[in-house]
Image 1: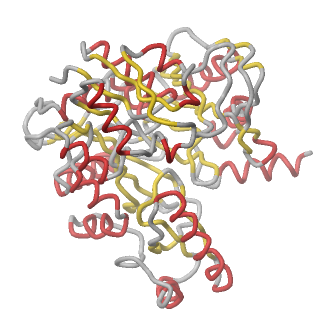
Image 2: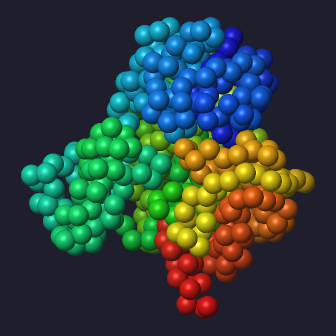
Image 3: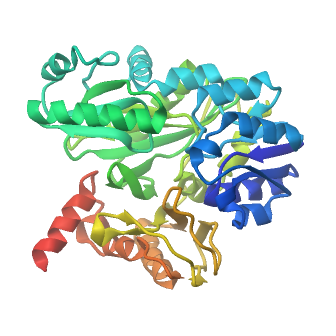
Length: 452
């Protein structure tokens, strides 16, 4: 087992990882930027080391600085959290070359799955249904012809993408020409790679994903699906498990397909297979997220399994399960709410400020993952995620009631957040009936506007 692990991330996920490392008696080191010197992870970790200025490119995305920090602090493992370098094959390779264990899949696996068009080919080979699309990346010379072959509307996606970035929708040839170049520019800026591929855009699907953990011996733990359909700008806001739209038969099928992909990629650690579910009940492979997901606590809430612990154990070479595939059954219902520093009334514009007062919800079935404290000033350089409130209960109906109570208890004076908007969603009849899709928030905003 590892002696000491460096966390190459920040915010609530860094706090989350530190807590599990402490329970595993693994010393923790937090690598932080100058902007995060007063953050909770810095206060909680056994050691803290500054890796550069506020700019992420000079700190949290600086591979040389992070490897040097691990060496200076004598860390024998690095946990990348999510975002930043968590799916960066070059980073995983650098860890390997420097004798440091990367807590995640191998560089080879990351390269294979990081190229979304290659991941689609792998899914096809495994017999998993995929959305119609290009077999590889498109170029300046052939993108118009490829789009016409698929038929509009077309989804333009960054090959190296993730987290909802580098995605554009084109509904006709005119939109295609402008959106293609915008997407390429966004992809280059976000991932250092402007390669794109196309998929047929499925109108108003559900976004369903399946969590798995695979060990070195090829044993796979597969967890109940998460429904991540409540999104804005292709980024999730509310997730729940199990999905109101997934039957036992479909759950079994999705679990089998997730395990197939984990084995095909020779995956080690925690990963997630993402699917689209159309309004006829047909599902399609979308991508594999080769890292821990922001919404992993939803799965923990209905299974009682610490996914960070399983991730660490897998990377350390421990055996996780019985030989073959082990399918974990859901116990009750769980919902996660992302509390972001954003103003929903202004197209979810990010907010900044100082937390003047902080009251976190509690009680039975309520968990809050956050890095906030009263008096903390939010850096303007990073993601807007402040906290996650995770609710679990014996039924979906009780989980919704419990969530309403918990969201009303939350106070973050000094900054606007998405908590009130989450309450609006909970009180929407379609949400309560489980009638949601990826256009739900857009429809809710239009509905609200028309009733004013």
